[in-house]
Amino acid sequence: MDAQETQIEEYTLELKEHQLKINGRLHTIRELDGTDRAKYLNSVSSRVKVNNQGKPVGMTTFEGLETSLLKLCLYDGDELVPEKVMSKWPASLLGKFFDIASDLSGLNEAAKKRMQEESKND
Image (tube, rainbow, N blue to C red):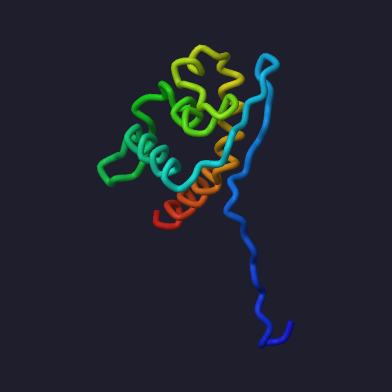
């Protein structure tokens, strides 16, 4: 590529999806849009314990952590699955679905990047 050629990246505004069956019923985990991602991140940030220097040192509670994400992106048909329903599901499934949802919405990447930046500032 010479100096005058420009690499153009192309994107789509379609939300990514991951389909799965739960007890034989088709469900979909959808990527969060910007508004729902902000809602989720705000709910997580309210759980973070910080030390005297303002650095994160832990969580105040893990209760509902996985379902607080899934209630924004796990669909049964066109309807979001209610958090009170999911909270009765096996923890192993909630963990798997949480990981899928986190990956789809780039939440794991954001967390890694934030941790890298914080370690540079130490």
